[in-house]
Image (cartoon, rainbow, N blue to C red; front, side, top):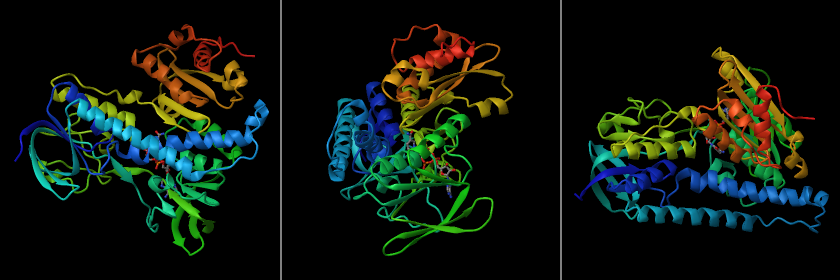
Length: 468
Ligand code: NAI
């Protein structure tokens, strides 16, 4: 039995490693256990980071082939070096993983490579990646084990031809026919990458709209835009199976509301129908912690505590499955353990889809406000009328701000356009301070910038948008 820790964190993803760093900064004795052999979790290894590396590179490739000429740039014959594109993605991942390892060391966190299992109150057993076994004793355990992709009945994932996000980020050639199951975030981001590199992409979605959770008006505009970019959508369709043949895959589907079945041929199928908490085999029962049927740990006190001396954060508890939400959970728990006030405002977790154009939102959608009977006013501004967007030839999309009809307090913002993934932060700060739309409308924004569209949308709430 080794020395006693203040905190043992199981999982080294954005939730776990940020919790570990913050706990280390606060002077606690911390261990972080990770079974992947690399820190960073899904986000860094097979999610946010590698997908952004491919989205960036594929965007430039597509722009070089389709947009450069109109800007007066001739590139000659364009060629794709997929191996190099994958290698630069792997380099980005590798560099960032090492960076986290450095940060753990700097903050005196013990990084333990192995699989952690709770063995009772204050006890965590670790089976090392090298086969060694150790038992840690600790005052606090933090469950930060993240999530895993949900499968579909009748579909066997092999990560080569039928893949999840993991395989989709490492295909060795550009598939001619690519089918995505699920028009959520992964579906749209991966569909964009492979379509830009030359695949014929079909996205099959169970619901009759794309991006559930996003504002309906944005989702409609996004669907129209992605169709123009070459993606085919089959909405309201339920996939019933994928048959693996030697030379192709045969996907069967039927209308979600019932009707005639049909089949589609593909070379690769990406399954992106959501994720479930990854909490199996963690020994939760030894500390009396329960999960729901999607593996989600039930938080009882509203502040991450799931049993005496046991806390849970990130994808394995309630709330959106997003890296930045997990990161905030992790910091809050470290602060709570250190006797400080830790809190996360789940109403202000921004969502960003890194397509081109980007899509970003925070706060309530129009549908949510209507359902709650809240009276609101809408201000909207199209990028077509923004001078910087026009000079950059990036005019698709708009900014929409929703404010309370009586108080003018901002209730939500929804954007689609160039760089909106960065611009949403302005709204998050404003909303965190309880801003009214007028606060943004009367704040000087530099000209010519894309962020002027945010200001103009805010001006639109009171009807004084300056638009042609
Ligand atoms: P998602 O929840 O975003 O979308 C899944 C989609 O699949 C939904 O539209 C759903 O209606 C559809 N679906 C479910 N069952 C289906 C079926 N049988 N047939 C056809 N369609 C079906 O999940 P996704 O895209 O897998 O992403 C997983 C998680 O990762 C999400 O929580 C997402 O927010 C997160 N993520 C976030 C990113 C970002 O922040 N940029 C990037 C990628 C993933």
